[in-house]
Length: 302
Image (cartoon, rainbow, N blue to C red; front, top):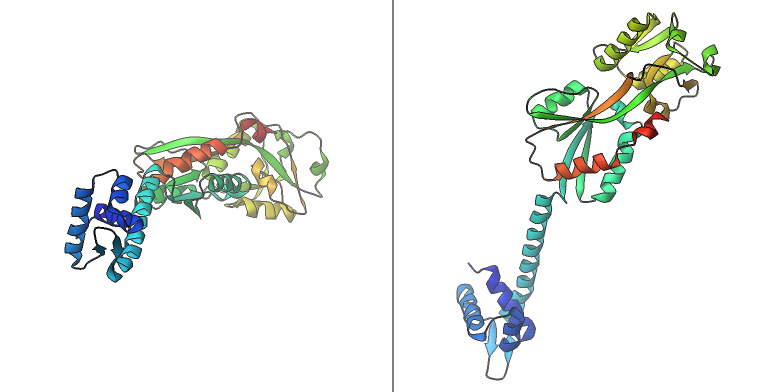
């Protein structure tokens, strides 16, 4: 079987129709160039060039082979370029999972920016709970998870992506909807929609501990897994709820969002989580792009 070097020599001669000029183009002498062409013809079993002392012409077989040889060399060049880009992480695919609340504003904005910076990286998005993402990482079904609670486990890396305050979602007709200052004590004995322990354990434990420490006892009317469902119930007037500030980008006609004075440690957090042995070349490119485009803490606290 012929080699790419032989094809390169043949294409040079076929282009120049002159061995001397082709040799100069290839930065070699004429004798080895002539031997490479002769070997190629021998391997193919056809005459590619008609040679005289005065000229070089392509045979019919040579003309056909010239077209295919150029295509083969271009495919080889593109294959090498593709392999190099994949190794460098410039092209490829990355699978990213996320908890539902990450899509309110933060995640869509970051994905658009990352795809603008790296258009040849295909990003696959999957919505999962934090615990589903742990299993998906263990079985290598995803490259990167965006979760609510950090994972302290060997073989995994966790990094805080963002922290944001909670805001109070209030039915528009509730008297507190027009209050200029709200504190935790204002929620005592008020109808309240709470995150469930099974679906949102980090929020359930954080908010329940906060209420106990402040000796505040809301009337829990529902325990819900989904922030969107919680806001829908607030919109229906069933009660109020504490939700991450980013949830205020979701608009309901009869929901009012108000700032509330809480302990500075009461924050909604999102974490990046990945396997420390991830060998996908596109993954570190994606990770660094997310880090560069994460929202500033000052913007989150506004």
